[in-house]
Length: 221
Image (cartoon, rainbow, N blue to C red; front, side):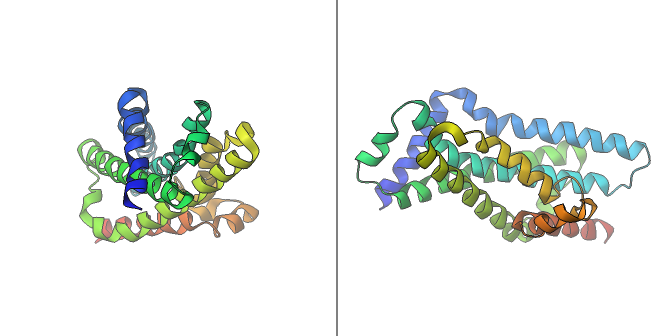
């Protein structure tokens, strides 16, 4: 059990170490989102937007980076095998589906936590936003985001295995679709009524909203 599970973690690590471009998902793209959206929020504040707008946006950026990396780990665990035409190798050994799920999920969690700390540190240095001040309270919410992202990733994996590459675009599109309904950069209450009904079903909506309320209340206090 342990050997089969850690083999997937090792496999992901070797892929990233041999393909430095893959490291961009952890060390480059999250910072692009933080800086571009964060600077835009500062611009809105100069135009009269409420000061807590920057808190809402930065919480959304950091939490959505966490989601994106978590989902990507579980989907890329099988996507790269499909691209390399070696998917059959994953089923030829002693490993089972549970080993694939656990190993890639652990790698996704490690990657997401690393990204979280790096982006949170950047938010503190650049914007003065101290996400570490309530990190213990963030754990339940981030865990919800991680579990949901892993679940969506596994759903995509099942479609890739059963329907081949025709659903591969879901790896990228699902992240964007869920982001819109989750109220990452705005309160879900501003969505049209039919979209709000969908939004309330998503656990990410409540987790991100909880983090936003937490930091706004701490700032006011």
